[in-house]
Image 1: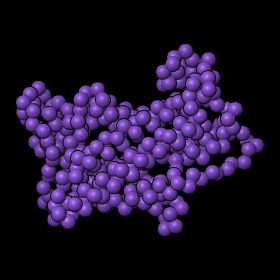
Image 2: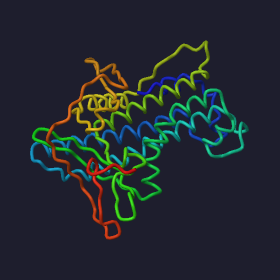
Image 3: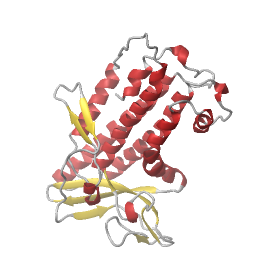
Image 4: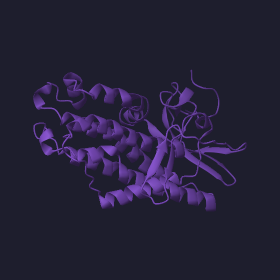
Length: 306
C-alpha cells in the first residue's frame, strides 16, 4: 500500500485537529479514498481482461461500454484522492490557522511547512492530466470514446476524451491529447495513474512524518483483506500485455515488477523497456454522430490541431 498509510498509523491522535474541522479521522479519510480507488482498479482490470479475451478469441469488442464505465469511475476516484490528501494535511492544523473553509485555499493561506513542496510536486499531474480530464467530464459535457488498434494477435485498447475541434467537428480534446490527434492506451494510462497514487503517498508521507514522535518506534499494522486485494491488483497490472499507442512509445512509461514472493514490488518511472508497434494495424473507434457536430475527428488521422 502507499507509504502514507504506514506514516498515518504511527501518528498519535493528539497531533490531529480533524474534530475542529468536522472531518473524519485522517486514517479513515485516507483508507476510504484508497478503497474507492482499489475497487475501481479491480473492476476496470476485470472489464479490460474480459474485453481482451472476447477480442482475442472471438474478435468481439462489444464489451467496451463496461470498460469505459469502470474507467470513468476510476478517473473520478483518482482525482478525488487529492481532496482526501488536502483534508488530511488540513487536519494537522488548528481551524484558526486560516480563514478560508475551502481545503486548498485554507492551506494556501496557512502555508504550513511542506505544503508548498507537496502542492508543487503534484501540480503537473493534477492540472495537466487527471484534474483536467475530470474537469472536462464534469463541466464541459466531454465524453470518453473507446478506441483501439488491432491486428492478428495484437489488441491495443484505449480511449480519448471528446471535445470540440471547431464549430462542426468533435474529436480528441486538444487540451489533453497532443495536437488533438492522439489517444491514451489502457496499458500506459493504468500504470501512470497507479504510479502517481504511490508518488502522492510518498509526498504525503514526507509531509506527515514530522508529526511522528522521535521516541516512538515505527510499527506496521497490516490490513490483511486490503493488502491481499492490493496485491492482486499489483499482480494484474504487472501482467498487462505491453500495448502502448504509437505516440506513447516515445513517452515515459512506468514499469511495474512483482517479486516472486509477492511481498514486494518495484515501480520505475520512466521504465527501461523497449516497445514496438506493428507495421500494419486497423484503428477502430466507437463514435456517435450528431446533427450539430456531423464530423468526427479520429485520433492519429489527418492533421494535428494547431
